[in-house]
Image (cartoon, rainbow, N blue to C red; front, top):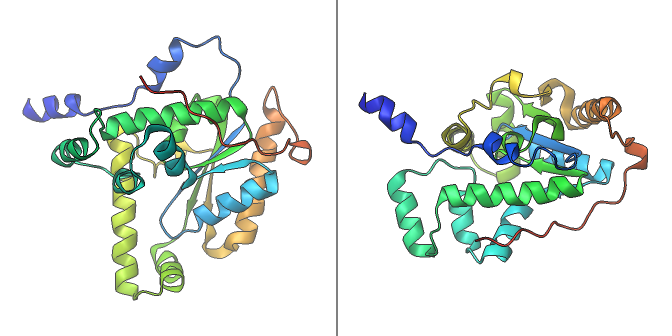
Amino acid sequence: MANQRRILDEPRFDAAAMFNAHSGEQLLGPCLFVSRETGAGGGEIARRAAERLNWHLLDKEILDQLSSQYGTSRVMLDVIDEKKIDWLADILNGWVEGNGFSQLAHVHRLHRLFVAAARQGSVVIVGRGARFMLPRQTGFSVRIIAPLHERVNRIVARRGVSSREARAYIERMDKQRDGFLKKYFHHDVTNPHLHDLVINTEQLGDESSLNLLLSGVQSWLNTRASATPIANTRPAAEPPSLVTST
């Protein structure tokens, strides 16, 4: 019973409840949601996809936007970004930042940013649960993966660390990201059924993986009611302004 109560008391972001009240809104998107295993190359592939599509990219820029809009320190946002924070750390963070700051509040701010971005459309969003915060038809969801040994090699080359340090870094980051998504959205992001396309970069490499991703996006756009061919996509919008918090 205690375990059941603890599960029920876990904070959860309820996207369905938020959008039921706005079912008559304009169609959001198009968006590309990029989920990634640490070291698989997903961040770089997302960046290059945004360039090729001429869409706006939201990755680390997300934290800059939230820091500017809400006055939360960039350091604090780095502490909680895509991580599972226990209740004591959340309380301590709230004391440091004040103004009722918590990770759940941060998730709701992410939601407002993603909705603002999706209303403008033509945006690539990397991680942070965007796939679960917006209506399913809003975007095309891609998961970028690679075997652990391949990811270790990439991190060693990129960060100049030992294989042991690279492996520990990968395991820590994946655990934090997966824990964040399970805590607030109750989904296992490693489940392939949650995504429209899963790409293993080991044998394809980044270039072919990027081309496969773009082919998938184009096919999805072609089946979308308000599809806009990639060749005719409009220039990337300016970073969206967030709704003022209340």
